[in-house]
Length: 397
Image (cartoon, rainbow, N blue to C red):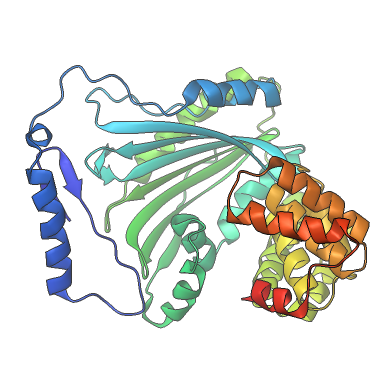
């Protein structure tokens, strides 16, 4: 890391081996030389307007999806020094309306409580049932290192394998933090990432009624202040009570929490087995979860993994239920419709596959993904199955 004027320069190099110090120094020098040629970067900005990214459009989409003002719950802490950039997003997760407010430091870090923060993410989700809101809390309690890294790194291609490759030298620790209960059910944890990434995470999640709120703060390595994150959660709870005054705060029955926990653990197991392409074991674990009698089900992404890898693993007919379960919460999710299109084609339902890929081509942005699906769609319309052995080998990579 380096800094010049108002610009912070950071290089994050992730790979199986470390970079040479001389290479890192050369990169930093190259970046710094470019910054040095712009004098404006060395001066403070006066009367800078607040930074927002598409807040109006996001709020409009939110209002069209739910009458609950989720955006008034995820309210970032005040920024009197204009040290942060704020952005907002709305999407459906498992079919649930989800609103996210993200706060990032302009100079990489900014103060939050007694420690620095790299960013704050506040997520408010409107579930269909009380049990689903509890599931959000239990998922944080039961998450392991792989889930934490997946969230921290996002969906960047190749990082999943890298995390597994670096497992031997990884000293990451997940520590539950005891805080007074927030809402009807809550959990808190501190994570020390000491592997492919080196930073600390302060996490609090709570449920009240059919709503859940999660606050995650990424911090520089070795820094934490759970009291500051708890204060953000308590403020979100006060706002939530105004938005949804009928939501109760009595803790859920122990039997319900136990039942939800069993599903969360099974979800993690099935997702891991599917990603490892151990398809028979993944289907067996799914059957053993007895979801027909459970208060919640797997995440759509887990069903999607089973749908996709089960189909590519030669069990397309058996994967049909998983594909339908993945699509059911949100029929507009193109990546999940894509998996079901593959499953239908491989199980002999060419008309069903044609319908899936027609929907995708009509709704996806132009690009290589759309071009390839257009080719598949043309073949299906001609009565041909586009998933030849060569195509399947490529998809399995």
